[in-house]
Length: 281
Image (cartoon, rainbow, N blue to C red; front, top):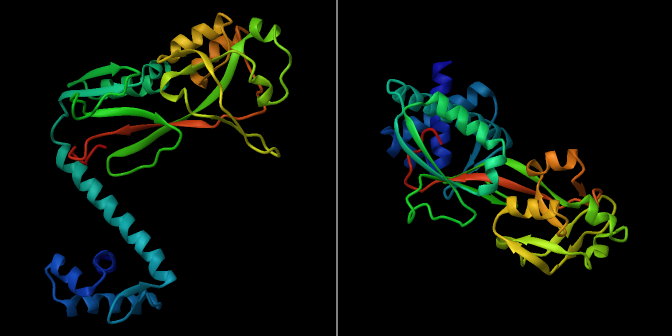
C-alpha cells in the first residue's frame, strides 16, 4: 500500500510538471526511476494512465480519475502536517476584520463568537462599514465582502449565500394598485443601496422570461438597516437581505412584494492579502 501511495504522488507530480524530467528534478530522482514507478502503477491497476508522446503527456479517463484521488490524498496529508506543526502553540495576536454593517445581524456573528471562544488569546477588531475598506491600505487581515457570485481562489473563500427580498410596508402596499408583474412597480417609490443604485434589477420566475428593471430611487442610502427602517415607515420599496427582515415580516410590518418572482442571491465571502499565511484560511 505504501508503494502505491508513493507512486500516486509521483504520478501527480509528473502531471503537474508535464514531463517525467520535470517531476524527477523536483523529487530529486532520476527520470528513469520516475518512469519505472508510473509503469509499475499502470501494471498494478491494469489500465493506461496517460499517453506519452515526444511533445506532451495526455491523461486517459482512468488517469483523470486517479489524478483527482492523488491530489486529494496529497492535500489531506499536507493539511494535516500543517495542523500538526502549529498544534503545539495556541494561536494569539491581533486579527483585524472589515465587514459590511448589515452583517451585524447575520449568522456570521455566531461564527465569529464561536471563533473567539475557541481562540481566546486572539484579539479581534471588527470594523463594520458600508464603505469598502482596503485590505492593504487600511491594514486589515481579512475583509468580508458581498457580491452576486463569489468563487474560491488563492485569496478568497465563499462563506454562505443570502437571499434578497423585495419588501414594502403593509400600509404602503394597501395604498397601491395590485402589482401582477415587476413592470407594474415602475411607478412605485423605490429606495436603493448606494453601491448598487445604478444596477438594473433582474426578476426571474419559473416559466416566465426574465425581466430587467431600471428604477429611479427617490431615497439612496449606504446602510441597509436604514433602508429597512424607512421601508417599515411606509417610504417605499426596498431590496434587502432576508435575514434582516424576519421580525418585520412576522409582525406584518413588512410584506414581500411579488413573492413569486426571485431577485437572486448574494454571496458572502472572505478575502485576504496574497501574502497571508496559507494555513487556517
